[in-house]
Length: 359
Image (cartoon, rainbow, N blue to C red; front, side, top):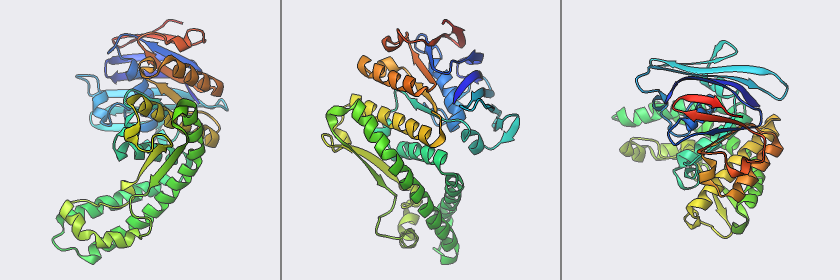
């Protein structure tokens, strides 16, 4: 898939801008702070309903503005064009697909974007929240039942947490229905996550071998959020008193995590910051390739400030892989990276909310 036309309004420094993108390589160049990353954020927003720089969508608003919107004409490999839009007026968000109002879940299901950016090392060295978001985005695009299961789980979790904070007595009749729903939904979510990890593992091993050969073979480890040998329904009942003291549910699918380990770097503390970035890039490329295997087309790939994140050898390797896969790439930098000097690409100059085609 690729974005043919992109229009953004009211996002950071962009009052209004429109560009036609190439189905292959697109490079956005300009000074720091000129708005290059904001273009990538706009595309990412359609796929994740948040920014890769901040989960708070309010941060995207242009200063002094109460409205923003992103519109894209998205072409698929079968030449079908899907027109997608996401906008905000005041506090209300609205998503549209081909002129019809849709849910956010329906919108993001139609557009797939992966991104490697300066904060991507958090996927390796950051909190479990980052890794769950990565995992669940992948599962969402492979397993149709994941989203309803995830929503049922979140609803039951919210209700149980509310009871923990408000109930004077831990009444079985109050807690049992929500704990049963939590346990049932968690089992389904866990099964879907495990199945996705089984598909991802060989892709990630291959990707990591190409980027970090010096670290040896990679192992991908998954923890479901409660002990393997115990039933969640029983644990929730046993932990009511402890959870009430803490004010939240301490076991379940919302506590899941995954980690990677290398033969010569068995703990993440053994990785340098540069190696963390390359490991995160390996995860990004592996997920993109798995999406392509499952859906028959590559997601859009955003590479923010690539030249400052990777040395030239790795830049060449990544660009060549994406060109061979015929993925659409949106790449930013203060200048055209050396790895792209001999490759056909559409280049745009970004200057304080203006997008000027150069090539």
